[in-house]
Structure formats: structure tokens, C-alpha cells
Image (cartoon, rainbow, N blue to C red; front, side, top):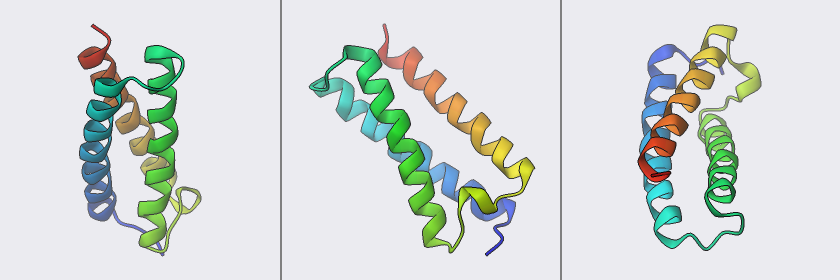
Length: 90
């Protein structure tokens, strides 16, 4: 299935909220090895997994997205992790 921008935006909005909630829980507990970097690595991995699961639910995949949509995903992921870093690294 080819996704349109509206559906991708909805997926990314949901993913943003999901990752912020997960980051809050992860940094409050900090039970992962590796300190801050370990938590960030865990969150990066979770982002990719959750994105692919959300796309799969729409009968799609990151590999099926147009180049501009892939760029949007990459930029959004960078923004989410910049926000997470700024919020929790201090």
C-alpha cells in the first residue's frame, strides 16, 4: 500500500507521543546498562521497531515509502531525539 502524507503524519504524531512517554519511563528508571547513552540506544532501536510496526499495520514498510517521505521520517526522528536529549541529558 502506498501511504499518503496525511497517514504518514498521523503515524509520526503517534510515534512522537509514544517515544516521549517511553523516554520518560526509561529515564526515570535508568535501569538499562550504559547510562544515558544506553537509554538513547534503546530508544533509537524502539523508534525503528515501532515505526515499522505502525507501517506494517497499514500494509506498508519503510522500504515502500517515497524518498521525500523517508526524508520526512529521518528529519522527524532527529527532532524527536534532539528534544529527548535536551530534556533528559541535563
